Length: 373
Image 1 (cartoon, rainbow, N blue to C red):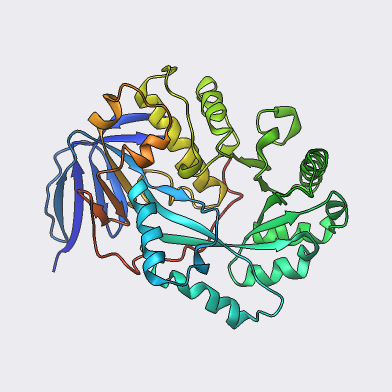
Image 2: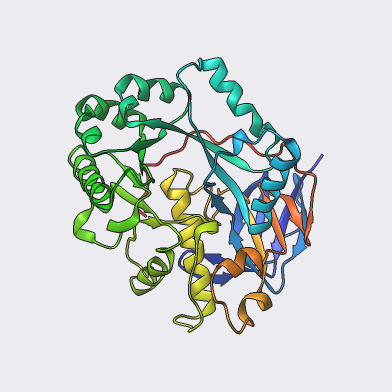
């Protein structure tokens, strides 16, 4: 019996570096071809369903980085509502940070992850620890559980010098781990301390060749401060406008910045680039760069053959004819996608949710050291 597949015709494909008119051919939840052609809709092995995407931009799905741990939401309805809001804004996958407590055994850690069995979105797990827990044995333990991205919370500069980097290096290299720096955000950490922590971390990770994502973006635009391969900066809402303009001015250069869609704020009251170029910049910052930073690219964050068929459908007229786009917040609150597809299946179509509870898969085999952003 022929298997079912899909071809999306007539749309405009948006990538991180430009747009093109092309059809997208999907089979087995993967993109198998991107080209405008007249291939047969039916072969001996495959029947292609046709989807008309005329007047639509086709964007790669966005990767959400929620500010709170979603696995802690115990009420099922609340959980589904949060997930659907992510889908409605164009997100097709997300990262959650598991923060183990000292009493938790491996089975208990596994139990904490069962909440996402109801997820409609694909998801990847990271693990969050304190600086004192950053030891070779800890990294090895989490590596065996498939957790290669470790979020480290630092409260004072002395904690960085106490880390035994030489014992971490071999594991970091063999397991291809990545460390995410989080500086404790409260009044007890003064600005001077924050600046010193950031600088000491940059120096240590550069010296020991440890790739890291830094949630404090102050050094993101000072190229002499960081290594262009080792250091990636996760931006906050206050710095995304500057970052997008920075990328635009250096369109084909490497820019080590990423930000989830929900944090992107761009002042566009005075148009400083064409709307379609702005859409490419949005895709690069909030989809492609985020996927690279967490090791999911090119499976996520791209519309290329072999990638998951995660596609966001956005009406051209909504994007091009708006007189004032004060911020990209309008994208997630006003210019909502018409439809969202994940792995070749509809999650949201014509502003209606499909039955997709439990459709999401846990994503393994992340490679956060594979790409320069």
